[in-house]
Length: 538
Picture 1 (cartoon, rainbow, N blue to C red):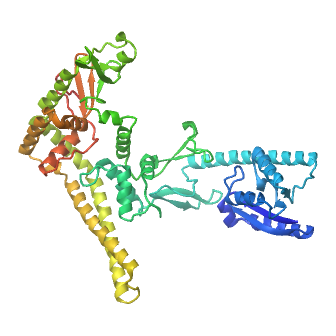
Picture 2: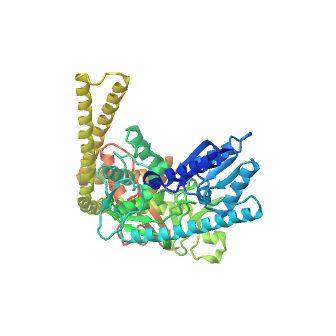
Picture 3: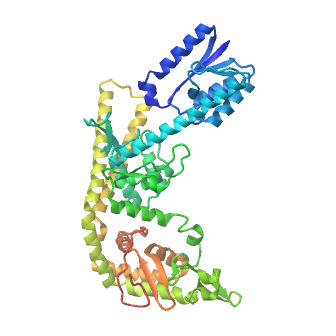
């Protein structure tokens, strides 16, 4: 008979180091020779679990076997566990082969074709599945204990880290732990810095960060950056020193209960405060938090105004067939009038109150000076991060210039031809150098921080200009800027409380004095206690 051989091991590590596949093939070839069978094809699966059918060679074998006519009559395996370790899937695929007129034979677990032989194969398959699950349970238990001791179980470390092998005398085999990879870590620090602070005055989201690196030819371990990949990196707690093992089911990719996770302490690339600030910013940008209907609504306080008694949002309500407009608690709208004690408030009255309070009590020279003093103190604590970013850019520039010089030297010495490929490479290096020079200049300006250069007269000028713009309700300026500066407004029926972003306000003042009008986003806690029951108090 014409037969096909199928050999398999579970992992690529086994395929590289184990003799299992050569030994399987040797025994199957000898069995075929003794029984007078002709080998039509051999299928070798180096590193795939038999608990599912996600195996390229296995699928190819089944596809070939079900052709009409089939190129062989029998599929030979060393043991039935090489074919499948799942009782139900085993039966389904064996039935599929039988319908095509192809038998499945194990050279070490031979059975007859009668009902008793079929029962024996089912029993073998059931025990193979049981053994697989038991092995998996014990392996996972050992890996979780390994993780609790601070060691790394995976084969591919997170971007920014590398594996360090430890040859411990008491351990069986070599242990691995994660350490910072200084060739990749600067890029990760750059990613977090761009998301949190933007780049040269421009806000940077996941899509913009991916485009930034792709345009400069900086790949992510050989592949292009994507918005989803940047988002995954920003969410990974490993970068603040907490690598999580056993978080997902590797077969279904579903997240396991948090009680099954093992947190492994590793060296942090990003400090915890910066990581949490990025997490807060991601949350604020989420469509679930700030939807397009909120940002696109013409109503001034949509999405900002909340009831201080029940915590619900306050939305638009109308009276007298639309002649009057109010802000009304959503609890009262959705349930009944007595569900919350916060009364509806006329929209014009609340809008004017908020804008006037912001203009009169926040945009004063004295309050801006107080904010400026606090921000200058804060800037002293962030200089190290800025210096690190600048150093990373300067190192990249030096490496690029060295590579470019070597390229030109090779051409001058006749070692490389000056063809189109080389010209394109030289042009890319030139473009990257120019971009780096711009970034370095921007990083130097950020390190110096224009906020620290603001004078009292500039603050006064900024406050007056902003006041005039805010009170001018035309063109949507009031809503756009109020949303940038104010994070939340609370109303309890008697008092209005605003909370917002101090650094954003001062950065806007600095940018205005540089001749720009863009407002940066998402820096918390700018309002001090104003001692007033109508206006900002936190």
